[in-house]
Image (cartoon, rainbow, N blue to C red):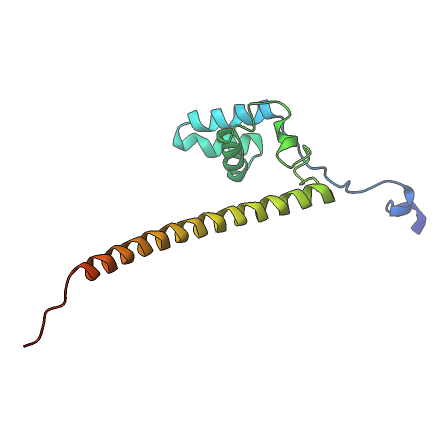
Length: 147
């Protein structure tokens, strides 16, 4: 005769994790370049098979192709410079970096405003010169007399 204690399942208190938390995959730049090259050289019917075999999604290939075209995959260490620390998460910016970005945006806006103002002054100067010339030519001519 068996007792109820013979068939007890392992509980969470036993220290055994029934389903460990999966970790995020990380791909090296060399692997990314190789997969993009393989995907681009594969015939149309084989592209899906390549993705399934490697356990990838088409969004991976799209993202890696854009990074390659931007020149971010070919150079070692560039991925950390682009705002990710190799984990796919953006790096936190410190207050100096935030202020620098803010000042750069403000500088660009002021440069654009200055350019518009200079163009407007140039146009106003030309209009003023034209009106003066018309005024002088009108003063030289004597108006017709009424009889």
